[in-house]
Image (cartoon, rainbow, N blue to C red; front, side, top):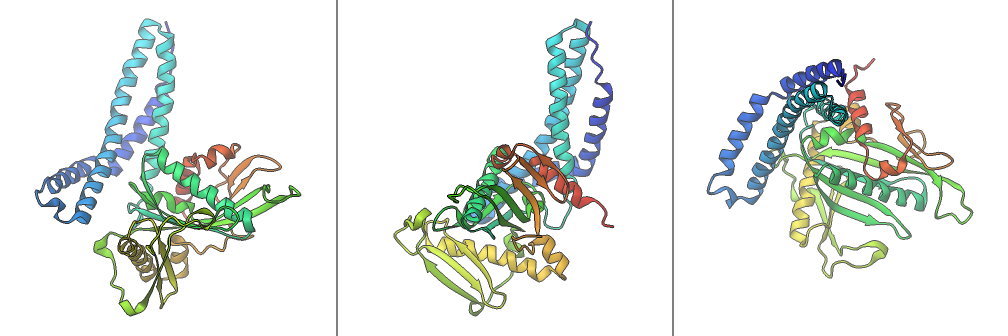
Length: 368
């Protein structure tokens, strides 16, 4: 007979999951799916490709959300059967499997619980992230590229659609800046806690003396607005520059001037785009990101709101929110939440869910 007392943990995870299902409103999700499926079945859906993309993307996201809830329900029911089997038949393998499955369910429920804290005005929007090298010379440019890879790997792990909209390469190594678009459920709400100054401490590979080097990179995250909410921008308020897309080391990756840089003259806001094949496509993509930035600026009423949504980030000493230390010891620590791990390589490989969850919980705490 196998004694497997997991009852208190199961009661706890079931109670938490029930609260989550209530907050996420399962009947509402089912209604939204039915409405979106009806829209997706319309024979003229693809007459407007952009509108069709929004419908199909929303349907996919909502179905995935409901699917996660249903999957947890089924796994909890299967867990009860597995525990009963282990206890009644004295099956040690089933006992081990049940314990591991409960731990896995607890992790999934914890992730869903964090999502219930995302109730901000823009939290369910796609996100546009810009990473810029800060103080630290070549090391900072290299660090910015390390962060770019980290966020791309994080997106891959979650099977999110991530698009590199633009990358400006540094001369010696690394990148000056990059802009990424994350099209995923609650992308902005999730990634907004990553906004701020990131600091890297390591033995510099670019220093012949092998001295320890501190470098910085700034991460900015804004929500990408749906086209129904974009604002009109008068043509005489913008300057459009076209140039040739380039890769590392200045090598041309395009034989035409297809890359686009749009400057909004009244505010000085600059958006560059080189991901698309044609100048027209890059201009349209850049204009949409610019409209999102300006809409945020328009809706922000004070400096605190500006910092919360778009970030007021200097990428230098005294402003860092997370430290990545590779020498003399190994550690990554978030300075706001005190969450830390001792395996920086895993973090740079995209294992940042713990930092994101801690950041979302920290942000939800009442301000003193």
